[in-house]
Image 1 (spheres, rainbow, N blue to C red):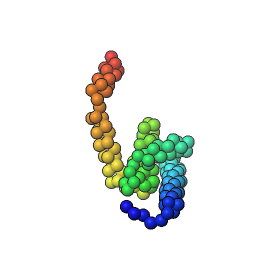
Image 2 (cartoon, one colour):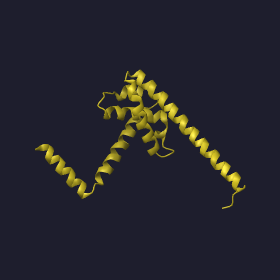
Image 3 (tube, rainbow, N blue to C red):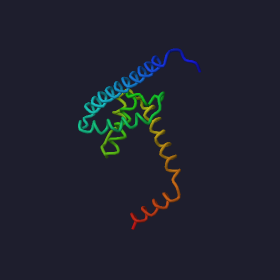
Image 4 (tube, one colour):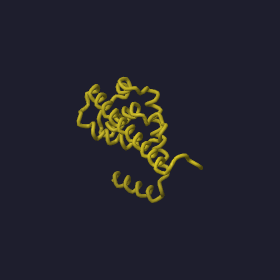
Length: 143
């Protein structure tokens, strides 16, 4: 493959592309934080949960591939809020969350079904040792 330009020009192009990618990432995180604050305020949730929810968002955002519609902050923020607050045992109504976000109920349900499929494939790949350990733990709880 032949490229045009000297090594210095190639390096400058690569650095410019990296800077653009970093700027987009920063913009995404800023938008996500602002959207989280808005949703938390509208649903009357404690503002002190925003930072830990933001950490979950960053983790999920990094795991989802480019090009997936759920990677966009306006779609991923409400989903992250819902699942993070549910994991903390807080009551949250999916209908209210969908009503104040740019997410539709159909998209919310589609993402939920993807999570369920992902969990089922992960649990079915357990090794025999893991299954044996899990059954021992369950037997100890019953006794």
